[in-house]
Length: 456
Ligand code: PHE
Image (cartoon, rainbow, N blue to C red; front, side):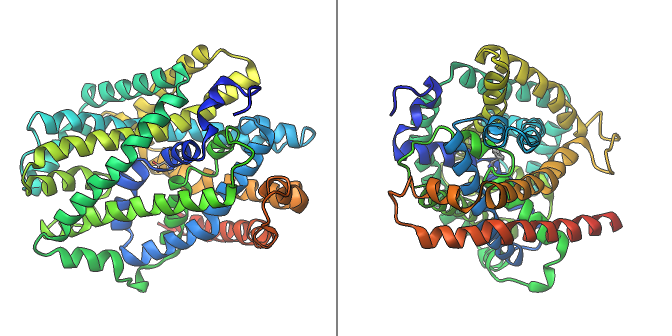
């Protein structure tokens, strides 16, 4: 680790540390909460296939693009573009990323609040039924309340704010390095339980036997949006984290590892959930509550289920927290570097702003339910506007910037660590992807996908 780096860059000195941090950003509620319910709502296996294509052909190249410019400029999302192109408005791409971080945090902290609450509900024995009606009721009561979900959202903000303010990238990394493997092992245990439930086969075929008639442009847009959200790309989180990566790191290799591991966690969450969905007579397309009603029923049908359940929600909370740290870091790096705010001031103002915005997401299940933006509740609007619009659009511009503006020579230099790595062929393939495939694919999906949505 170089001495001249900022203190906050300390933790990213080893390859394992980099993977832990980047994977810590990628793995979160996206895998455990969003992936299963979006898959459930979009017909299962065929959606997953489209999703995998989106990850490989679009998400992964954009992740690498962000790491390249982040590491090269050692700057936040806005500063990176300003350094590379001071005279042109490319920095607006970073600005949109900062906005996306606020909007994602608004609903993410709300869901993370539910997860935090579930730790206590499962520990307190409030989730000990295998009946769908009972577990559904516990969830509905929580989210349609006012003070309870707001309280948990504030707890989430205080926890993440405290960690960020202390600047303990090192602490969180050390923690995630231990806890990620535990989450993995726990998922294996639930997978085994879920797979041995009577009637599990139906869930598996839902997950792995594609019915291509289910693929519509709306489905493709959902898959693309999920790929961006999952890999934390399109809004500068990976530029920010990239700026903390050591110059000897093999960036393409690392991005591939992260994308693979992240996808594996999502699939394992799917295997944990769908066999149980069918075994217990739920419907796969119940939306955001899927995780919260299925997981208790699975655990309740196994020995020591309650202990495992508490553990599961603790780990989900930790995964969510790791992802939120990267979202916050986008805003904090931006405001401390571009405006010279202290980390403390930046953190306090940021969590205050997110708290205010986020309360509208939380309350959209109760007192703000009638308020809609483009026909969506605040919660759904923040979610849709980021995943399905801002992140893909951000992805287009990041790809155009790296592919056309920054260009082949610079990409080659950064990707090969100034010529140390012999990866010319890879660079050439990458240039085709980032110059043509990524932007064209996103534009097509967005154009058709969003137009279709107007007819809905
Ligand atoms: N990738 C995170 C998840 O799946 C969410 C996230 C999106 C984090 C964008 C950072 C930036 O939970």
